[in-house]
Amino acid sequence: MIFDSPPALTLSLVASFTSSAVSIRLGLPYAGRLAMATPVARSSHATPVPQSGGLFVIASLTLAILLVAGVSDLRLRELAWLAPALLLTGLGWLDDRADLPALARLAVYALVSVMTVLSGLVPPLAATGSWLLDGAILTFFLLAFINVTNFMDGIDGIVVAGLAPALLFAGLNAGTAGDGGLALRAFVLLGALAGFFVHNRPRASIFLGDCGSIAVGFLTACILIDHAHAQGVVAAVILPLYFLCDTSITLVRRILNREKIWEGHRQHFYQRALDSGQSNGSIIARVAACNVVLCALSYAAAAGPAWQAPALGAALACVAILLLSLARGAR
Image 1: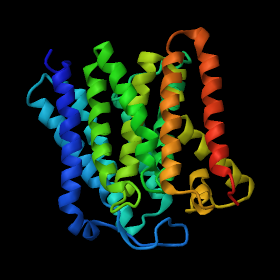
Image 2 (image 1 turned 120 degrees about the vertical axis):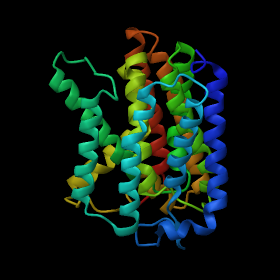
Image 3 (image 1 turned 120 degrees about the horizontal axis):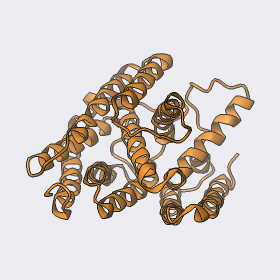
Image 4 (image 1 turned 135 degrees about the vertical axis):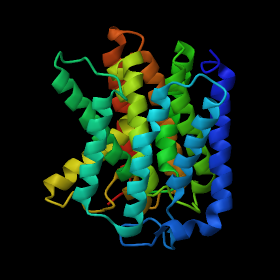
């Protein structure tokens, strides 16, 4: 099939990257009118910066998918995948402009996650023997990863450093296995994020914003679920392990300190590292390097059950080393 061929997948990657990079460059003079991030106490920037980058990212990957649809036998699932992402992008844009109530946002995230599972946009887990429990696990993961990505989008370039290696790895695995649909989704998201990084690398001229982080988190979670079906749950969990660990540890710490976990803060490891004097570039370079290692360990975990425990242990050790390096000198 044309759709599963390397030229079609390469086209999707190039189209999403080019569209993202060029549209942001052309739209920068006007991006602040869409949504502007004004510095507050928890911010990592000192001057107002447009935070509408997510609009360009999601528009670019949508354009790339539609472009590939014109030269291939694109399946309905790949087009349907865009609907919840566009809904979340719109919600995030409203939040960027008007600061919507946290519970209202969470309710919409939960509804989108439930409908994604019930509609079959992500494949059933089939892990516990109970359809209800498996669906609940998938729903929780989608909801959690939307929030995880949003929480981790706190300094220049970190979302791309944290997710790009995993997306490239998942896309290459899927392409090799002949799963053109999964490869397409991974490549268009990777390309759009890479184009965004051209303008978001330190010092960023535009931020992803909630209009991007929640949609990117949702789309990545869907890709990880598909990857879990192909390569195993352990292999899939290893890929975003740094994001999961940084968020989980920070959340537990805040709960133990009886803080309001729905309020913004600067307590993630990467934020504390920046506050302690570590450079933004150094932080995201180490995050990216860790995620490359996690990709290799995910590959090992997919080799068979005997490799899963050692690979997961090595992945946890790798993340622990990164977290310790980020905590060095942090107060």
